[in-house]
Image (cartoon, rainbow, N blue to C red):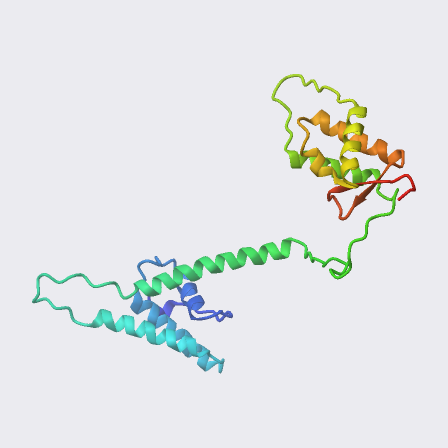
Length: 246
């Protein structure tokens, strides 16, 4: 291709590699077999046009021009034809080719993220409103909603990784609530406060966990225990209420 027939536009390139990649892609040149003399000539013509337009050219563009001239001069050096066993030398273009390939890959990645950034709405995060220095206080009795209790129970089931058997029908034996009430009373008799998660860990099947949960609600309804939850979806601490209401 004659360089005099080459039409050069003057877009804003991000650096010398961007300019080189533009010259290669616009002429559909194989990046692994760059005609170094042709590309060097076109690259220098481009810099001269920028100088004629009084455009500021970064020093890295001239560094690349000297690199291209060095590679071109290596091709012009005479070869030693008098020695038979001469190991083939490395192609002086290899390092430049690797730089262009890496730059091309990162350019495509950058374009992808730019497109994604324009399509996806901007989201921001917010730190917790409660200061870390403030201690979490237990909720007063009666202020735990049914939705919060249901969500906590759902987390218990996931924690225990209870899975249904792969059969056409499932039969769950009901565990009497009174048995679980007696179980909780025994635990609370030894200690004033017990963890619901720790009690659930002792259960063997899902019916026992359901019975334990209903027993906890029954004792709370009778004002025999307090239910304390320190954080959302966290463990439930069951605290025994003494005869004097404490």
